[in-house]
Length: 340
Ligand code: ACO
Picture 1 (cartoon, rainbow, N blue to C red):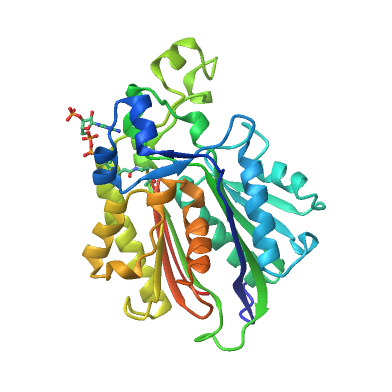
Picture 2 (cartoon, rainbow, N blue to C red):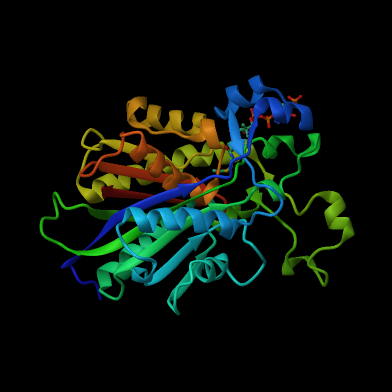
């Protein structure tokens, strides 16, 4: 049962991207693409990709250490990890367990969630519920991806490979006493949705137990079934519609208007998706903080990575009202309104 005397405050934010940058011009040499094609259709100018010896949990570790430090906490203060990714270290266990070991945390609960681009907002919502119930004090919510090792970087995969980058973002959600609901820093509302009838519009088919005895075999690999498959036009149409819809419902539930919102921190799949959402809802573009130019689509990491960059740039300041929305594979979509 919810306990209304608590609020969930984002007390620390951190991020990490691997140092090596690949510009669109670098990709021109790999996969018969052009800088113009990528910039015009997506807004992406560069992305960071890991070296071979770096894993997802390595990126997550760096982002988490920064988030915990920025929250003014010790690692031992964290009492739960919620980890969102679609590019795990290994098939199982969840990457949150590998992160917990790297952080040398005691036997706290670790929960991995598989909601792709929407994963961070799903994680934030779950953290909010655990905090408000009174059961937890400081939950680490992480979104982290290593896409670069799972992309077809030949001309065959160029429609997808140019879109994705590696990176991690983390926040600490802390339990505080609710004093003034109108002005307290807190997660005000979260809205989570999915429609599995579109699952195969954006997915990685193999390996999978739905594929017969092998899960994966040489024929599947030859067909590229272990690489992401995307129907880009369908994703575009649904992303704009669903992000707009769930922003409207979150702001309504929070009893705020788009004018009241100081900053919009959207998932970073494509600059054109975010511009379209802004146009549909008459949101001034300057209120949207985009980072896709620098990182590409880092899926579960885009929102916490954007938060951290916005804080560092002085764009996101304590007390501001923020609205977030995301859309991704599943299809899944989600929104949140929160006061930083
Ligand atoms: N470089 C050069 N040419 C390319 C590339 C590339 N990287 N990729 C595809 N093309 C070519 C195609 O072969 C095609 O050529 P043709 O006309 O000779 O057949 C042409 O460009 C147009 O291809 P389309 O796939 O129709 O391109 P479209 O205009 O739909 O743009 C894009 C593709 C950018 C992916 C678009 O569909 C889109 O924005 N979709 C949204 C999906 C998205 O952003 N997904 C991100 C992940 S999901 C998420 O996070 C929500």
